Each structure stands twice: as structure tokens, then as C-alpha cells.
Amino acid sequence: MSATAPVTPQRILQLVNAHQSSRALKGAIDLGLFTALGRGSATAAALATRIGASEKGVRVLCDFLVIAGLLQKHGDDYSASPDAALFLDEHSPAYFGSVASFLLGDLRHNFDDMAAVVRKGGTLLDGQGSVEPNNPWWVDFARSMVPLMTPAAHFIADLVTRDYPADQPLKVLDIAAGHGVFGITIAQRHPLATVDALDWPAVLVVASENAAKAGVADRHRTLPGSAFDLPFDSDYDVVLLTNFLHHFDAATCTRLLEKVHAALHPEGRVVTLEFVPNDDRVSPPEQAAFALTMLASTAAGDAYTFAELKGMAAKAGFRSSEMHRLAMAPQTVVVSTK
Figure 1 (cartoon, rainbow, N blue to C red):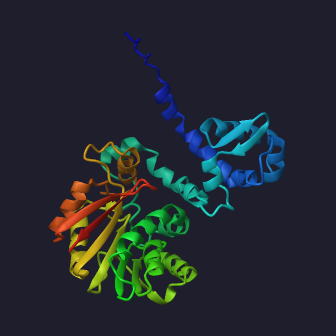
Figure 2: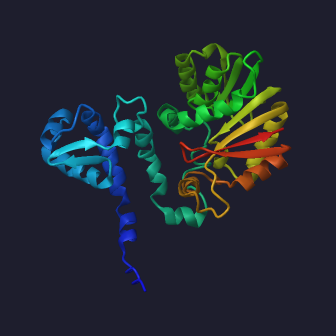
Figure 3: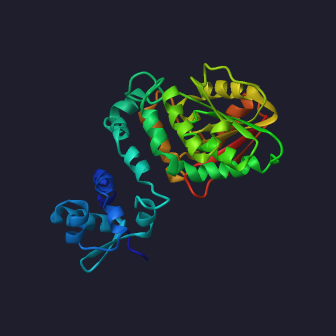
């Protein structure tokens, strides 16, 4: 008969002190610590010289990051763990630091008074929270989040372009385009694809810059305004709704999907990217936990299950929906066909 494991406050204390881990990570990114280690393993004294910091401060921070699993220590030398070397060294093509810095910035203040958020049932921010019209927050988002979204953009481009021959036009509407990477990636893959990118004017500046860098500016048109108010063109083959529906309640999502349905060509599809929890709403952990982010930052948003998203699409007139879990990111693609 096995002994019962003792009950301890360890898990509670880990949650209490979780902010230390996130702030230590941001500090290391701000100091360029992981980039400095890209030049080779080093002692605290050598690293202090490389990044212009105190030896004691570097030693304490590095030891903390060893405990966290982002650094390795051999004797007095520190080196980056494989994931830190790949994603946190500024010279890496997979550099992720802009994403981490953005998520560790002002966004964290939405969680300062969770008791009040829970009592209210939504964000303490004014109006609609993060989706207030022309919120400058979205410009920072667009400039920061491309590394996080690129794998999903390639997955979606694979789904879309496999069914449209390269010698046939492909008309795409990218709603809440942000950085524009989803529509841009499709345009890179399909030589006759044209993309209408819809977002706030200041955000579309970022999308246009990215389209020019990708060499598809001549097939990338901007539509400044609100997805709810701006009239859509017709006969789109594909409409992209990436990381958008979770900001609104189900009724609002359904109304938007009805508008999308009317804009699609017969047999057209809407491709939705979301954090989609299972029906139990506690798994998979990262997708389910996103509901708290929406509670704290929007007036009525949520993390919707596939059954809920499929139901919204059906009410809007879509005849079928299929789900694709992403292996490389904690998100799900839902493709609904007119």
C-alpha cells in the first residue's frame, strides 16, 4: 500500500511567485542576455562585460534562469538552453523576443485586479477594452507578433492554396489583418491571389510594410475601417478571421459571420484561427486558459469551443465546419464552407 503524498502549499507558492519568472525573462531579454550567450558560454563576469551590467546582478539572474530551465550551468560557465538559443537570441531567424516583450508589457495590467474583473464579468478597461476603435495597442501588436503567427500562417496557406490551382485567381479578404502575415503568406504561395486587408488605418501601415517586404504589395490592398461597419466586396473565395472572434460575444460573432457569408463566392470558405478549448473548458491547458485573457481584456470576449464556433457558423448559413489543431502553436484552425 503506497503512502499518500503529503499536501503542501508548494503549488500555491509557485503561483504567488510566478511574476518573478516573467519579470526575470523580460529583464534578460531587455539586457540582451540570450543574444550575448549566442557568442558562446561565459562566466557571470564575462557576461557582465558583454551586456554592461553588474557581475552580481548577472550571476543572480543567470542562476534564476538555470532554475527556470532557460540556461544551463557547467562550473561557473552559463550557456543557453536549446529553446532559449533558438527563440531568444536576436540573431536567430526564429527570434521570439518581440512577442515575449509585448506580452510582458502593458497587457499585464489588465490582470491587476482580477477580483474586480470577475465581479464585473469583463474588462475594467473603458468601452470595449482592447477592441476600442483605433486603439494604438494594435499597432504594437502588429509590429511584435509576426514570429508567433508565422507557423499558423504557413499552415493556413497550405490549407487554402492546395484547393486553388496556381493558374486560377484567388480572392482573399483578411479581416483584422494586423501585421498582414496571413494574407501575405497566401499571396506568396499563390501567384494569382489578391488580398484585401481590413483593419484600422494605423495598423494597416504595418501590414503594407510587410507586404512590400514580402514582394506582394501589388496584390495587397488595404481597407481601413471596422469589419462591422465597412461594406464588403463580393465573390471572395476565402475570408480570413484570425484571432478576432474571441474578442466578442457569440451573437456579435454570428452577425459578423453572416456578413462574411454574404461576401463569399458559392463554395467559398471562412478560415478562423482561435484558441479553442475542449468541451470541458480546461483542456488543452493553453487554449483553455486563454479565456482568462479575454475576460480581463474585453467587454464580452471568450475562448469558444469548436461546437460553439461550428454553431455560430451554422446560424450564419455555413453548411459545414471542420477543425484542424495546430502542432506548432496552441491554436486551432476552423474552416467553414458556404
